[in-house]
Length: 208
Image 1: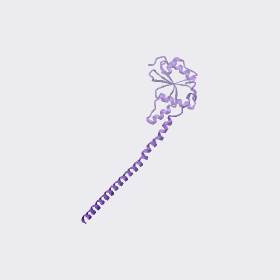
Image 2: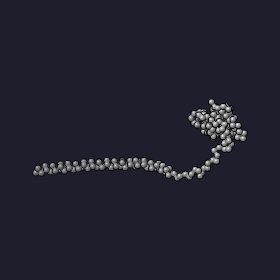
Image 3: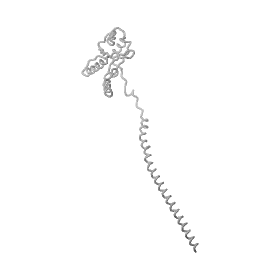
Image 4: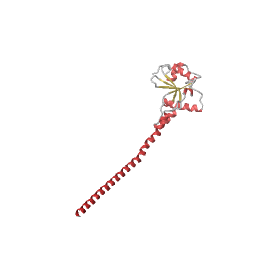
């Protein structure tokens, strides 16, 4: 009888141990499953954020593709005709007079005042001055063979109020830069042998 009780006790203890082992195993599997689900949810939450970068890049790249498909513009020559003359008839006469009067010099037409003189100041103040000077046009700039500016020649035309103001600006800036400023009347051209004296200040002599 005693050994039967002993067997029952042993069987009960074994059953309890088996049940306890299964319970702990189930708990570990449940905990592991829960951690896996949390990790999966975390990755799912990160995925849209990481996917948003390509979504933002695609619209930004679209203009590049569009810009490469810009329709071909019509020929400029069909829209903007060329000027008939680079300089007018009076300016042409004076140009050839200068070329023959000082053949050892270079003659440039239609040059801005900003290309001939510098501007005072620095930074934005200087830039504003240069933009202002670029609005003034010089008919001819005479340079020696080393491209040093010798004189500026303008066509002498009847001056209105605006023209007189422009003339004063040119004269002041060129005088301040030490550049000769000559005005020639196209209706009363000086003789060719007088051009060197007007332009270089050295009549009938080669420049030094």
